[in-house]
Length: 115
Ligand SMILES: [Zn+2]
Image (cartoon, rainbow, N blue to C red; front, side, top):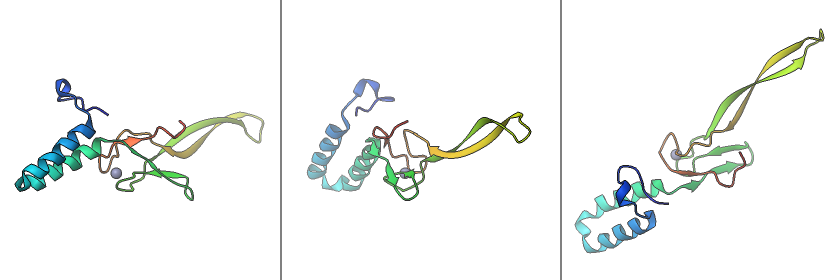
């Protein structure tokens, strides 16, 4: 993955960037905490595979475990007992497919999950 946006003309591979920061860490031990924070912030930008729970059939953030599900309303047309067609409201909980966790900001990878 490449960092784009504010630094469009300075696009750099996240892994390369982290490696450079790790090397700086060895050279300048005084800036240890600032470099550690920068590495952590960059790692948030690397998409992590979403976590799936077999028992609940729900997806969650691999980093903070927040739910990545949303409620969706569907209207189904069906015949009622008098033989007339009516719409029925049907609510279901589905994967949200958001790019970033709404709680912690972790970039998410949904590639293996069918939409
Ligand atoms: Zn999260």
